[in-house]
Image (cartoon, rainbow over all chains, first blue to last red; front, top):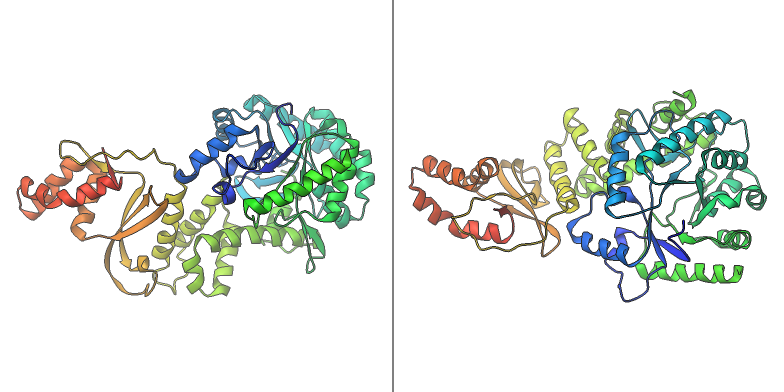
Length: 271
Length: 224
């Protein structure tokens, strides 16, 4: 990921029109490409202006790389045409699946953490990269239930990165949420993760759902102090770009800047 | 196909019961995505519908399956599902109200060419622009109240590029038929059709329509 440096922010339609191009801008943007396949008339000019001012990477949700069926060519074609049109070099999605037989869940579902999955997904990654003519980066996802597993998550991720040669989008909030929900130590997990494969870092918010008895990775609230602390620990081990990912309950741009400044402090303190 | 993936899908779409707390979370999350997207795309409909039956239809739709990668399009699949399977039978105007609310989303989400104002002239051939839709309705759903008033209503909905929003106009039957023909065959044939139907000369029809068409051209509702 040589085109991004420093601190980034997810560019969202919700606050796009609030952004002053002469005011505060992050070092780089991340966009959710599926949300920009159709750009409303009143957003196009501003969107294009914003991504022309800062390096931009794409982070999708609909690739469904982990589903046990071929990737939808029609979807890949649309993605390639979007990425090519806006000259976006880096594209990522999640180590998960979201669709089967053409039916969409619009959510990220967990995959089997097995040796068989690693082989199958690695082959799919290769096909996706060949089609898109660019590397695919994959994010460690949250899971609330593990269908089948013959290895620990950290070993699964390390092996998948090793076998496929792909880079990791390191989501520290997801590690924290999984650790809390499944009773392991997030710090130990990170110590065992092969961070030489990490491309950049996501931080995001989560909440405790008392009824379900789990932390939910909602991307719908502020980043918690525990996750900021965990980010600081991570940054002492690896010096790569970091960004805040907010997908739901999106506040004003002003509020996002306030949270961005918290991230700046955390990053400075880690150095 | 991995049976585990299939199993989780069945649970997420409430076709089968969850066998663990973790599976319950996916049932909750997937339902929330569908429910939030659909209820926010159709706020007027959601306000009047019985909430229990709405939940039931959303669940039925989830089981039926949404196929579009673009999540913003999913409520349109829901609308088509409601129409196809005759859901919400107790609300006679359900299909039309859902259409009315959807067209707002659809016209807002489209990309249009930049505004190019050109004075209207009969020397040009006009077509209905992509930012505009005409529809014959049985219920006055566009009034946003008293939906159940039955009759024959003709609606023009269009995206206004100056105000960045969708505007609506109730139009006459004559204007509806004219715009319908204009959409299909262009303005010259539409004028011929109207002249024939009203037994007037083309010149009279042109004179009669001039102000209206000038305004429609100014609003980019019709284009060259």
